[in-house]
Image 1 (spheres, rainbow, N blue to C red):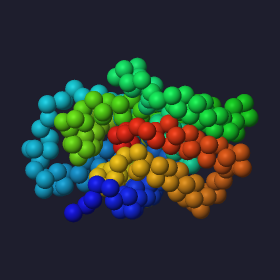
Image 2 (image 1 turned 30 degrees about the horizontal axis):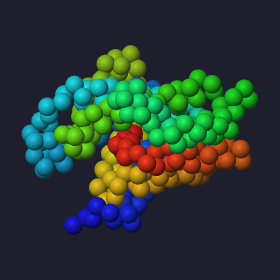
Image 3 (image 1 turned 120 degrees about the vertical axis):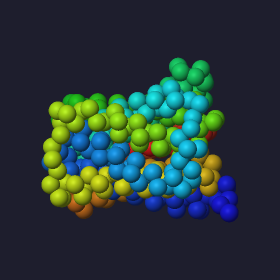
Image 4 (image 1 turned 45 degrees about the vertical axis):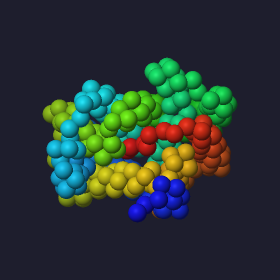
Length: 291
């Protein structure tokens, strides 16, 4: 039986999840020059749905799908899909590690979103944490230097904010909805939402592109399942910091595959943002992030 406070086991699952999410990002980066963001988003959801269906069937598909909060799932999926489109766009236009880090800035925004939406007043530590995080982001993107595309940075930050709305919406339904059901509805409804854009954005993939697109969905699903197991082994506040290893894995993959590297100021900014996010979320129990 898995122990709820088994931090060592949780860390292993969380590190596997981070590696899977980094590989997902690498697949998106590799395929972004050959196909559109709309096609990538569709395959990410459709492949995930196909992989989840056997697991849901074994657990009892009817019980898994049955919900008293369809509106909550639609709201969560809407925010999650918007974050996904922004995140995948940013990956295609920014260094991989920077795009991943901007999306992982979510803990900086969640306390304020919860304050406005759920009237949950944030801990005082959140305010200096956000200022520290913004300083770290400035070190990475260097406003005015032209190092990174301005629009891509804005879209990457939007991905983090939208992911924050998705996480807060999870909190509104998580009292009755298990993680497996939430993940399933994201994949199922996300597949339907991402179908219409294919009408104008479809590009028939060649064999290499198809493998990368399937890899995107497969690694995303593996990461979700591993992260779910991690949060089942230890409290969220203790598991969360391990998620930032995805940034390090992404930086390593980007260096090996494309020769991407960040200067010392960007590396310092990366460490500052990670520290600020951990500080902002340390006392809070947040739902897990899903790619």
